[in-house]
Length: 511
Image (tube, rainbow, N blue to C red; front, side, top):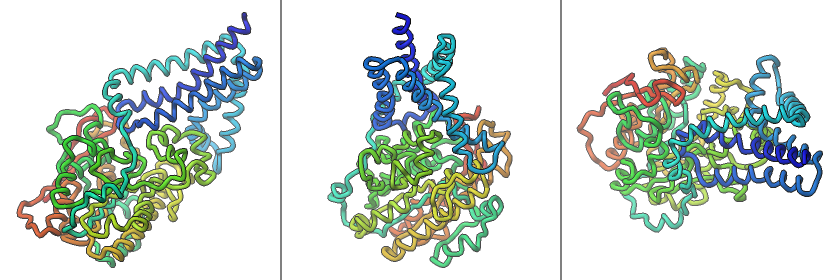
């Protein structure tokens, strides 16, 4: 009887250790339910089911000692989610590569925990620890269950390009390519922050007839607001709007709003089709208004790791570390390297762009972290944040942008190319602070965004932010004269950790 009770408690402990990371993740991200897809829930269900099934099978067919081995791996699957955090702590005390030391420490810790789990007092302590984490996470989730049910099951499948092509009308205007290098600062900030010389890094743009703005402010300092401004063609939040509680009305969820966002309606009105190449963050919109470009996966198993929620769930885990270290063990293509994805699709399916009239939005998650080498391979040799890491990633971003701009100019010489980042440098130095605690220099670094335009009305368009730039270019290529003077405004918003989350503060305006 005692042995039976012991086995039941061990199985319950295995189940608790297995499901707790998933519940904590959901609780910590309850304001971001638009990122949770059905694929994510399939993944965590199968991930948890494996250990639960093994525990019951071992208990039924084998003895107590084998069950303790399963418990050891349950501890391992729990603690491995903190692999990167432990590695960062160890780096403070030890220089060089620390992954093997962390791995040894985790394995040793799991062995000790498994040994002490023979004690009922210790098991009760672990149960209490896990229960408190679960209760806190569930408490966060309760207010958002209704909203979550609507967002959880949205489809993120890539649309079939050939079927959408049937609805193409004869094109009237040249193609427009809108490239978003996430977090690429203006030339002024690049020089001041990372010592990236304007002449060395940007001179190639001038030789290709780009007009490069030396210093331009983005509409907002956060991606979810600046890209919402692009899609709304207006400022989605100002100092006079009601404080928002979550990001549900902003990017990326704004893409699937009904009616369609302003930019989609405006481009349709001018006979433009919308092609989007998104990174993991945001993923493909579900609306039929878009043709979505993603890397061709070799298998359904590989496509699972293209899901943004899954990748964030595993971001700091040992599993993710193995994937990076051993050259994409799980996936063979970098979905965040959207420039390569787009060039590949343009070569394989040139008919999408051949007749013109296509607006292509390419959101490249570069130079955004994780940092990259000059050749764009992901690296962990830089701390977080790091000026040298950012500098290396910025050169990668320039290399990719020049690669696709050369391809576009060669194949579509009349196309307009816009390179405009969503914000400037991400230093993480203002997280958790109130707006009045943030220095002017930090605001300047974060909001100083890179803008370069080649094509119609390039000089004037390069002065505009996300709200006005597309309308200015389309008006130019369509022959419409813009008589109204456009006013650029820039607002600073905060993330969920800040007491000022939900409010924005105007920091810049000009005509």
